[in-house]
Amino acid sequence: MTLQLNPFTLFDICCIAQGFTTAAVLFWRSDQPANRWLAWLLVGLTLQIVDYFLSLSGIYYHHQWLYFLPLFYSWSFGPLLYGYMCARAGRPATLPRWYWVPVIIQVLFYGLLMTQSLDTKTWFWKTVHKPYTRYVDYYVACAMVLYAIYQSRRFTTDRWLRRLLNGLALFYGIAAIDPLLNQLYIEPDWPKFYLTTLILPILVYGLALVSILYDRRQKLDRIPTSVVVLPAQRDRLLQAIQAQALYKDPDLTLTTLAQHLGETPNAVSRLINSGFNQSFNEFINSYRIEEVKRRMAAGDTEHLTILALALDAGFASKTTFNRVFKEQTGETPKAYVKKSQITLRDDADA
Image 1 (tube, helix red, strand yellow):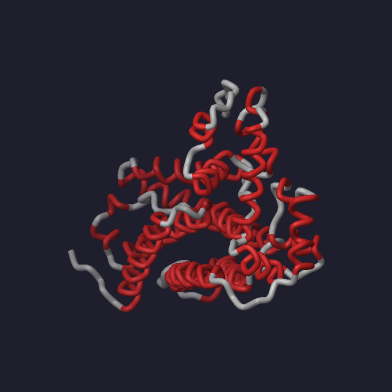
Image 2 (tube, rainbow, N blue to C red):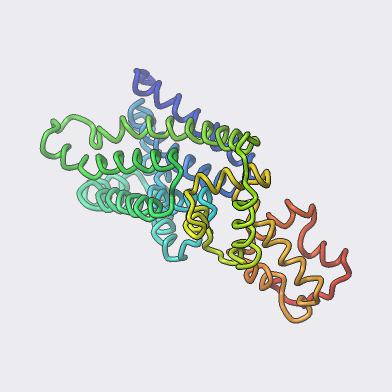
């Protein structure tokens, strides 16, 4: 077998290595939910680059049994992108279950095709997939990502993340017209989806680099600065959080808190960083954890589950609550209850 190596396939190899390596690093830093969302998104995008590489390098041609490898999970890109943006903004990534139904359908679709004979794959490609279903696959993926971008822009204020959304919108806007360009202007013997085949590897490579740089920037933002926090500013923030109990709102974000205080999100972020040496999420979650601990000590676990207390305190999910509780106390909620000799309601959700 002769492996066709050219600038395009070599660049694909670099992007595949970069994508999988960055995803592994993000999984390793799984203390932040945003990292896990982005890691899965990178895995899905990189698998699509693997498919491009197998095609451009001639591997598919010499090993035709590999056709329809389950490498396309493009219907997951929209949900994963939205989950990442929600996590970065400190919002609960509460995606409806039906949002994942297309993803399951796509996985089953390619998984079933992979097990078929070459004759069946050839027939399906010529009579069904090439003229019909590949366009359904393609345009549903574009629509889901563009919808996720539209939803995310409503609450994303970070300049870097908005640039990321703009870049993705540009790519998928081009992708939406790519098949039309192929049909109308590109010669029949040219590869289909030519533009996206070239641009997607660049997107994956850029997304991997941006994720690393963004994490570094976030760490730098956590370093205390010389910003002077006025007592009046601090008092107004504490009044909103403590007296008005804004932390109990599961949809509270840096933007909505800033609107409540009549400040810009950047000003509130600097106030929390400099005045309390915490990020926005850490600051809000610390009040939520204290609220849960207070109600535990008051005996509320005798008639309510721990999960019910967590939801009342503003946590959007059991997973997030358990993770934050252990980060701040060093113990799981149940271990904390047992250690404190608090009566616990016997419930599966506790």
